[in-house]
Length: 92
Image (tube, rainbow, N blue to C red; front, side, top):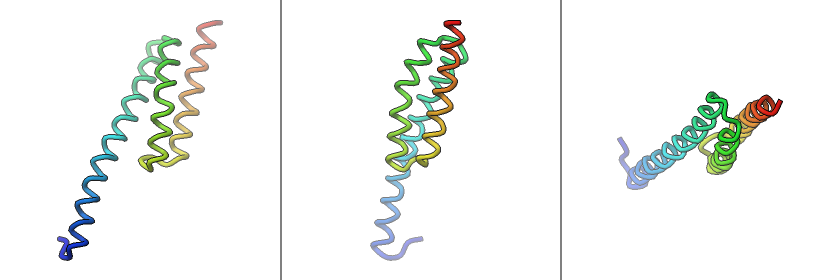
């Protein structure tokens, strides 16, 4: 248990920041899941639209420190490749 005033304040700040980060992480997961679902359904247009919304969310999470920059970059890259593969398969 925190004893000093500054330690108590730090505990409160950490709790607030944790809640904010949880919300941001959840939001990112939601958008990524929407892309995954569109890919699973085979709808290339819907997948591309969902990806264009998910990409800035991942970048925002990385800039806020919720996820590591390389993690966000990797997720964007892999999703982009899957969306591209689906759109190429749809046109072929």
